[in-house]
Amino acid sequence: MMKQLFFKFQNKKQLVLASLGTFLGLFFLFTSLHFLHKIYNYGENTEMLSKNTIVVQKKVKSGSLLGLSSSEFSNEEIEEIRSKPFVENCDPIRSNTFKVVLQIDDPLIPAFNSDIYVQSVKKGYLDVKTDRWDWDENSDILPIIMPRDFLMMMNNFLSASSIPQLSDNLVLDLKINLKIGTRNNRETIHARIVGFTNELSSILVPEEFLLWANQKYGEKDKEEISQLVVKSKDGQFGLLEKHLDEKELESKKSQLIIAKLKSALSVLLSIISIVSLLTVFLSILVLIQYLQLILTKNDYEIRTLLRLGHSAKMLIKVFMKYFVLLFSIVTLSALLAFLPAKYYLQEVFISNGISLEDSISYYLYAALFFVSTVFVFSIFMSTKRRILKTVNT
Amino acid sequence: MHFKFEQLCPHVFQNVVLNSSIWNKDVVISKDERILIHAISGSGKTSFIHYLLGLRNDYSGSILIDGKNINSIDVEAFTEIRRKGISTVFQDLQLFDDLTVKENIAILPEFAFGYDLENAHKMLEDLDIIEKWEQKVSKLSFGQKQRVAIIRALMKPFDFLICDEPFSHLDKLNTMKCTVLIEKRLKEEQAGLILLGLEEECSFTDIKTLQL
Image (cartoon, rainbow over the protein chains, first blue to last red):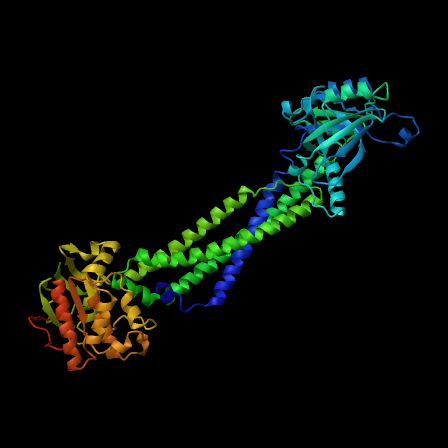
């Protein structure tokens, strides 16, 4: 009956506009904050090369093609890099000297075979737990690190076959076989992906495996060293990059590009978040103004009910219940709209080679808590102030 | 429950010579009394009721309810007094025009002990407006509205019934019927009556007259 009494003269247009504003503001706030967090954390847990570590190779010049200069590193050249004060460590990247075919044997995706080459770096350069990277001849599973380029290529293949693309988490569960050796002397090794890298274009395997397989199935006597892994001392990465330039060495720039991309996207999403937050607050202000209008229109009713013995607390509760219910419906709608938007945008990111973690960001829950608290507090204070003022008139 | 007025005087009468037995006097009204406050126009009748209900405090002197200055009673405690201690028939009735007669009574925060909507329905019957039970108050004449306001005030628990010109638009017969109903409820609640009116006489028995 109270609701019927208080909310009889409603300007529905203003209410609908304010609710729509709150809905849109919350929707964009949830979406931008979620992706801001995910983009910010992108690659943090699955990127396998440790901090300050890069892969270097010699710049390809026309002389290389004519055989006048070599793209291989000599022991002296490796030692020279090692001796620099800003270098913490430097080691060759070993490559396979045997034939490797990667085969995906998983019901998730159609049969997939590809000739690949594998490489290995010493454990110290990798951010991977030692027990997950161990391998010996008796091991059932070979841990491997997948280049992101390869994952993107695989997703393009799946997309072209109208099959859903694979996120990082799904790829980590794929059953993979490596067929090594020639047709007459072939062995199948069961492998599992333990992480991803942007620095290398080849699949990384434990050094123990590569040494064993090169010895057993290798087709060349001598291994060629065309790439090095170099780790600079903390805060001296710039000196290392300068030295590489001087020596006409180059590193893969993908890490840098990803950092720039993350930074640009973060700025963009931060701006969207701030604008969304402002929209939410402006809409809340309109809702508060609407509440004030209702309270003013119901001045007589409130005063009479107080005179009959209704408590101010009970009347505040009637208004709170109405507006909190309205806000809950709007918030729930924004959350429901966020879910398909999140799914769609995640697909767009995956198809561009960026696989974001699937769970809903806690930034969203924090924003939800913050906005709800501000709303409930504002509505409560406005109603309380107005009703207590009416008590004494 | 009792009221005590100590040198009570509205600010607007501060420098006016008054011939009143309430303003600028010390007066006690207790629960077992029935008081007719005879008030001519402009003597501060509505202000007096607002002071009693703690709605205004533009006065000098003090009002005490059971020995406690009403200015020191907090909002919640005063709500309790309005809920159970005082019931009022306002001059402007304070009904909700958009609600039905039934809803206007049902909206009370608490019914008197042993009373419910059925009793209100019976009271309407006694006052010859039973057919208005489901009608919106806006459709009623002022006299009918006055009777609804009286019934609503009687449905509450109270120690004091305060009525501001409750019969101003009622004929003699309806005034008598209302008086009987009020007398009955005063007895049941063992409550006091403060009746404010323009006349020096009224239909109630054992009533003491004070000049405002």
